[in-house]
Length: 265
Image (cartoon, rainbow, N blue to C red; front, side, top):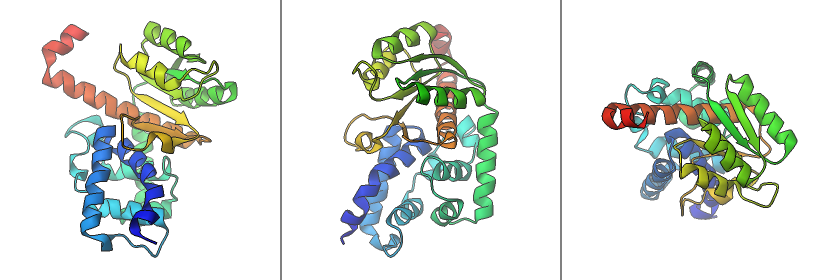
């Protein structure tokens, strides 16, 4: 089996991880492209005899050169070390075991467990956000709402259609949006989010049963994706990452352009 054939099915999920780690589709996809170029030059960095997914993620951590630039110095994300974020994202969003995550980043299981604990404490200590949920299945919406409220955030509303989502969002101005793809009336959560992003700057997490469809790297796609069915830890970790990255960018923007920030406030 060729290297391309073996690794191609895993690349969408590596993009998901890189996007969550960097807080940006552009940066995450660039990281994956940079890694693939390095892998082509040094194919021996991929250990093909083992689980393909573990081998791919391990090679990514060996070859990607942009790790030091993730998060701006002094910001909330950089204050949470890269190792801690890797530990949390690998074991929640990517659902590797602690032992597998340790193997991927070249660490011990004790260090990974400590990193997860530190990351969760940082997320738990974050300032509460106002959250809009766009989901047409009542049981799933209730599950998400429970997770969000247990984290200390406020749910401003649950929308089942595109029109409801746009109305709630423009009226209440949420700090975060959690959105399903397919909605009750046949409308699209993606279109609802596009409408909202046209009038506000807000981080968005999509929840879908088919994440690979939004992880091609060939067009503008979401930064944060959660796969259905999901576990509470995955949702909480993704919310934490999205809010930390967004608040850091907002803080940097205010620092770099205080006059414009004052006019916008």
